[in-house]
Length: 96
Image (cartoon, rainbow, N blue to C red; front, side, top):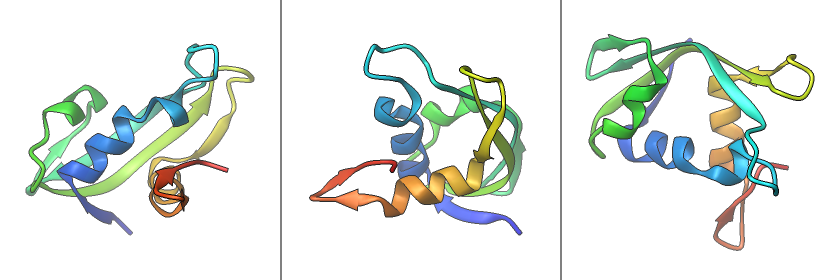
């Protein structure tokens, strides 16, 4: 079942280096098989995310997060986004 959000939330998630990079700045994860519906139009590239408008209606249809460390699957894109969204401690978003 698709998960719905808005452009601002998805852009913030995508730009949050704390969940994508290690303390040394090296990337930890990558996105594969991404499929979004933005205002009803299907988008298949994560490079489109930074161009979203804040009020765009976004449905996360598919996507997988993989680890560079062991090349294994970490999570679905929707579940990783949900964890980021709900891990708010003292006003700072953190993945635990």
